Image (tube, rainbow, N blue to C red):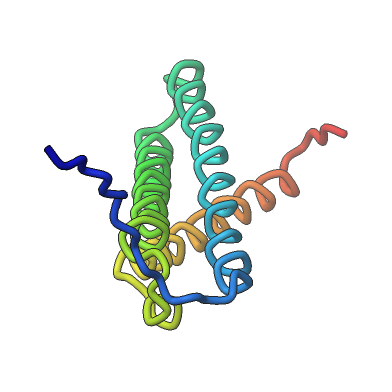
Length: 136
């Protein structure tokens, strides 16, 4: 009987400079981790808001709900994009130059979130300036 000394198949990957992956995908992975952490904090804040400020107007409650939903979509798209780059398309140099639809969707959602938050901060700032009592 012959012995079967077959070694596991080796995958041949073109040698790419590791700087490409460290500068692009490493930063992307850190960005996704930070984004998910901030999303967790925002979710906790939204939960505490709904728990403690039940008398607020439906408009404000709806805006908080819309913002937290948009943040959830943003985080989900970023997780999908980093999975695409690091797992599905690992070591494919053509992917580095292009983008995936999940990344572009995350950018689009972020473009919607930014003006809403800026408008809200502006409204709070103007309300604080016109208030009779100032808290320092």
